[in-house]
Length: 303
Length: 277
Image 1: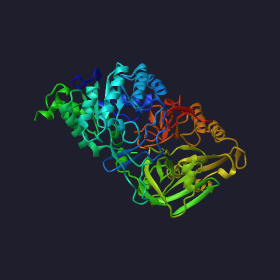
Image 2: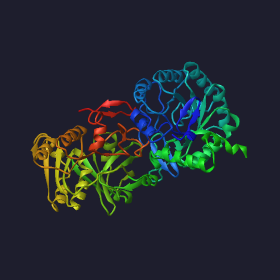
Image 3: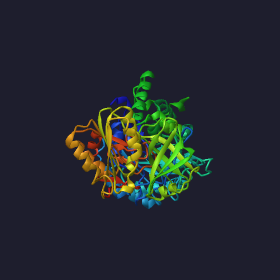
Image 4: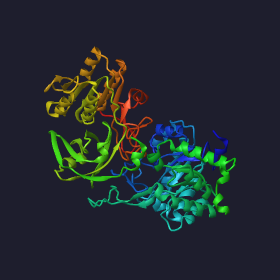
């Protein structure tokens, strides 16, 4: 482990600032172990709720210019099963469990089972753009966000991250509400609400018709969100959205991200992406004669 | 498949110029597609049936002229809808995905059960081109369900090859299981590679035979699939993603997942469930 890459977020210690984003390969312990072995500094699980959910029919993922649109529909086996799956995995990196609920009480219940199972932190999915009565439907309302965060923070004593949706008029307002209610870190951003229609058959391609856009297409949106939040909010930010090279990662860090999450890049670049991004960041630090990756966080704001 | 191919692999719509009835419940749908014509035997495509579903299917023919096919058993809503398609109708298609078989030129045995034969037919054709020695064991429940005998026989006619048909009820060829025939053959001679695709119970038995008789094996596995590009995690077996690291797995890889192989799959919630035998 290169010491200059060690990243601390809300009390968690990551060997490097790359993380696996929620929704990617996070349904089984052995998949998560493989991502850790591939070099991720931390992993976030797929979002899990109180009860099992089957998710939507296929097509659930469709490729478009510069990215993917997905509407999986939050398939998960429910927290009680999942907690055992993950606690048996014995991972060598921090595990952050992504959780969702249809009410504050749901979130608190899932959080409490997850913490008993031994996860290192929680990431509240207040940003899924394609399931009704949860995710972004809570995450677009500062009052609801505050309520969920407070309820979870009262129930558990682990760091709580909030994953934000870009599908709002003012992401800073939501970020502030989350931070003021006790969120220990913010993940920005989840996917951008999107759709695609096949012109031959005239059918929307996704079974759910509308999904979330990820990948290179949303990177500039995500960088802007991180930049705006960093200016106004005083908790660590984890950048997410279209990162697939070390250059992308550095750009997010300059905007204010302490760490970065990757997901879609695993499809286009393979699991090697964690190592290649980490090595690139390290080379960048060396070239800029910086000792520690923390030194570049928010640098773009000093201009 | 190479990562760069995923990058430029978007959904396309293609016409079905020809449909062939293979058995009372199995049809082959022929189409033209450039990317698929460059596929390796064992790679698969995602077939989109608008308004119904999207399902993974092995390529049962890979023509260099762009003429390819999938072979589909009527087993559920998606496949029943597909079976109602007529000549001139359309298919949505993305892929080919996954790794495919690695052909070798030595003494080989190909063991298929039911529609599991689909990817093994283009494989056999490629083995024939490599002048491998090939024995193909074609397994089915009854005579009606035996597939591709004509194409396999044609491919083998050019080389030192033979085909053994096996039915569970003895209505055609040898009575018994494909794995019984495989074991008889393994007792008699050494094989440089076993190839298999079909019911997981059959493949698991063949894996145990491969261990006992010290023969390398390549098995094409099936799991619930969604993204097909290695990110959603639906099709995992142990540390492997069937869509991306597979669907074809080696003896060494099968050993690594032997706790799950032949025993457990995952349902749509991600929960591990016993494979019905």
